[in-house]
Amino acid sequence: MKLGIVRHFQIPHNRMQIVDGTGFDAWAEWYDTTQVHARQVPAAGPEWGYCLCSDLPRAQFTAGTIFHGSIEVTPLLREVPFTAFLPRRMKLPLLIWQATSRVGWWLNRPSQRENRAQTKIRIAAFVAKLMAEHRDENVLIVTHGFLMQWLEKELVAAGFKGKVPTRPLGGTIYLFKS
Image (cartoon, rainbow, N blue to C red):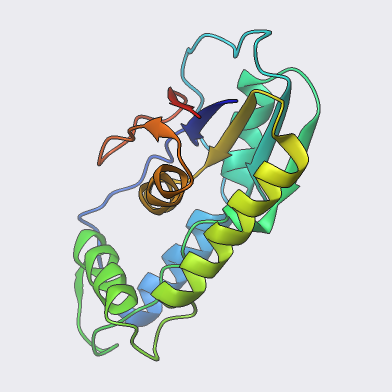
């Protein structure tokens, strides 16, 4: 079994924009619903028999651009939600809000909509589904940068070999083999 893991195309935005907690929440909502800017990438070849994709629009657009076949959309591949972690009155660059949101997730803070244990359970459920339903196929998986880091760990634990860079490039296929 061969897997190709792809991060969605990028969404241009100003990571240095100064916002408070409410502004960060509004940005996170916008980021989850806005369209991406495609870049020229080779289409996924015929070796990919199936595609599994996050249910967020940016991943669906990317999947439809690079894969020409049946695409199954699943919330199991959705990005870990961004949620403000610092005092909401603070005005900081988006970059800081993003980073501290991930720290809050790592620390399992109650302010986060999903904690680490929930993310691990969700990814484990995805890998179990993948192995049960697509064991004999080469599958393209379109998801999100942060989730890819944790998906890699689960796939390696399941016996796959492969690597995702810390900052994966949108539209690039990263290979995993069992």
